[in-house]
Amino acid sequence: MSELEQLEFLDQAVPTRRVGRFSLGTVVLLAGFLALALVLGLQLARQNVTQPTGGAAPDFHLKLFDGGELRLSELRGGVVLLNFWASWCPPCRDEAPDLQALHTDFSEAGLTVIGINILESSRQKALDFIDEFGLSYPNGEDRGQFIAKLYRVEAPPESFLIDKTGEIQRFVLGAVSYEDMSRSIRELLAS
Figure 1 (cartoon, rainbow, N blue to C red):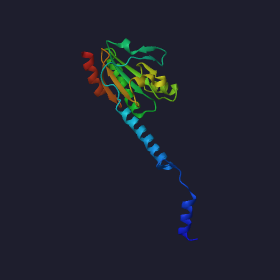
Figure 2 (tube, rainbow, N blue to C red):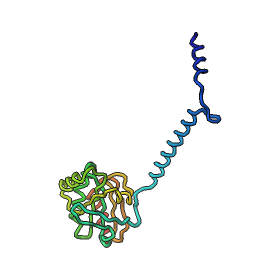
Figure 3 (cartoon, rainbow, N blue to C red):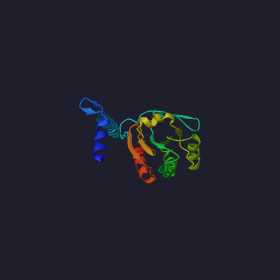
């Protein structure tokens, strides 16, 4: 039997199943493409939902690492710098001294810095981070990422500067710098 005859024999031996006008393989391939398009469409739609950069700051209740509790709405009348962080995050490590300095320099004037630990592998790692950088401002763990979801946080660090009336005045994606943030804090404290 020649090679051509063998190929013709195989072509006859393997029947293709058809669904309507299309083969089963074509239907499966089309279904796969549709599923991929749906997933990509949902991802693109999610990208258009960004962190709040203005308007009322969502209220929350936070249990602090030191055993205390904090509710954002109880801090109205002062300026709040809300910072989402994780111990494994290099930019979080870079900004920690600046956040502590902002707390030290502006807390008596009416600034409250709040650290919210997210996406942490263990409570102890968060506590070690706080100890390593000597953070004396309130810090708590966002178990279940409920607060992070309110603020649509995607990855640490992300920070929100909230004015005396509870309105978000500034959103910072990435590490906070003392020099840049202190200007905004001074303006909000003066108003």
